[in-house]
Each structure stands twice: as C-alpha cells, then as structure tokens.
Image (cartoon, rainbow, N blue to C red; front, side, top):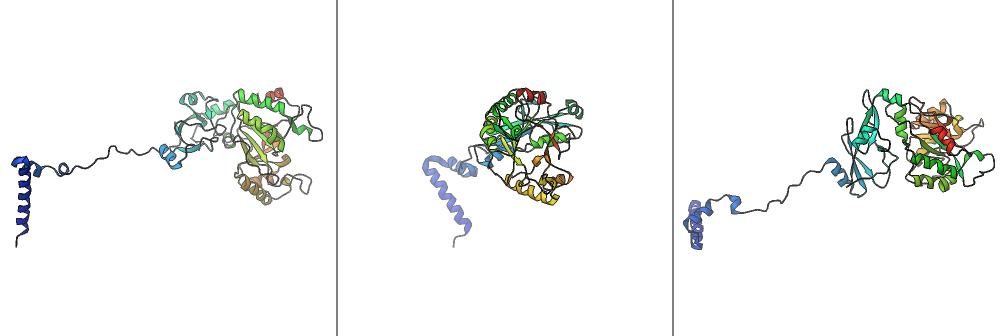
Length: 367
C-alpha cells in the first residue's frame, strides 16, 4: 500500500512534468508552484466601496417619496438630528430650542438671514417646504432676553366672522359680523406685501413664555364659525396671497377638511356654541368635566389640541379649567387687545374686524 506522503510527492511530480512539457521549463514550474494563493486564483474585487448614508440621506431613503425633504438644523443650540418634512405642504412642528439666558429668534433659510434676523428670510409653519435634492438647511438665530423685551412686540390676532360680496353690507342684527370681501382683499394684500410675519400657535405660546422672539411686525389671521361665506369668499383670497389663517370650527355643525394648506382648523368647541341655563353660553354654564369632554370630542375630529375660541367670548375660571383639562394650551376671547409676553394663555385678546372697517382701519390697528 502506498503511503499518503508518497502519493502527494507523485502528484507534485506529475504537475511539474506537465508544466515543463507546456514550455515553462523547470524555472516556470518553480514559479507557478511558489506564487501566492491569490495570484494563483484571481478573484473579482468590488469596483467601489459603498459609503454609509448621512442621517439626512437615510431619512429621505427610508421615506421613499420624491416629496420627502430632510431638514438639517445648523447653528448653536440646533437639534442634532434632521427632521422629515413634505414638499406638498407647509412646515410642520419646527423645533423651538431653549437655552439659559437666551431667547430663540427663529429659523432662517441662510446664515446671512439668521445674522440679520430677516423677517423675509425667517422660516416657520406659514411657509411651504421647498427643497433642493430633497434636502435643506435651516439656520438658528438667538437674541438676549433684554433684546426680546426691547422689541416690545404686541401681536394682533385678527378676528373675522362672515363675509359679504355686497359693498352696502348685509341687513339684520348680524350686519356688523359681515366683512365686505373687497375690504378683506385689500387687507390681506396689505399683510402679504408689507413684510408681516405670521406666527404659528406654538410660536405664539413660546413668545408668551418669553422663550421665542417675534418681530413687532407680526399678525395672526382668524375666522370664527367656519361660515359658508368663509369658504366661498375669503379662502380664495387667503390662498391667492398664501397667508396662514385659522378657522375656528364648531365641529357639531360641520367638519369640512381644510380648504387650503394655508388654513388651519382649530376648535370653536364641539357643541357649546349655544346658550346654557343662564342664557349665556354653555362654556360658562357647564362643569369643567363637561367642558373638557366637549372639547375632547372636537379635538378628535380636528386631530389637534392647541387653541380654542370661546363661543360668544364667554369664559370664566371653570371654563379655563375645562380647556386645560382637555389638553389645550391656549384659548382666544373676543376682548380687545394685543398679545404680549406674559399674556394669559387662556384669555388671548383680539382685534375684531367688522363691516365698514376698510384698509385704513386695519392699518390703524396693526400698522
């Protein structure tokens, strides 16, 4: 029987003989036998090495939608992680950073705009998302508490109700509620073309707390009741001017979807826009638990708990308790005035717009 060593020596001899016969000679046989294993059996090597995706790239890749936009925040105090937004809508829930001894002054589209606190360059939930290659950078700006107080911003919340196409107005006891649409068009054009900043409700809340700087040239536009004339006459003006506005909707009466991406639906209660036992609104007749239950029903329809408008402007401490209990952060009255740092969040005042108040009247009230 042949040993294993003898068989291996015989196999090597056969290989060497084959190489020699093929013209390689003894030297060729030696070179073939002694070269490195990878040289003996070449393998394909990957043409390139894949690089890991950045957090922004990963966010867009996971979204798998050409409308997705990864927003990266830049600057001192900015969040480290990017945020997904959508290019067919307005910015949603942009962060409001906090830092001891400083007041956040907003997000801006460029470093230069941030340094200049440019109102035109400031980006918030009133702006459509516009990205390049599905990514965008927003730059943080800060002010001191002293600078924030010195700005002395007094934020007007405009309150409209119904609208009319008749220059002479409507008749009846609600005549004053009907703003002439020609006046409304002039007012909205003024706001759209004279550099007003339109805060979101979360920004207004942070401003009241002293955590966010708002420019004095700011305004919030609201409508009460979501009357059909709001949809037919006013919303096209809002859409054309691309102005953020809030419609306070009584959800027991109607639950229309937002008529424009520029229109926020917020609660005018579910079914408290009627008189209670005392003849005043249910908001001041019901218990805090009853109020909270009604507002929760409204919030479930609208999908948001943020701010309500008191029906008829009626409220008291029990009403405030019910609003807070339902998870709402703010409530708007019909009392005249402006929102400032430290304003009671459950008693936000308004600038009421009635029939006969044209552009001059608006400018007198908001600049």
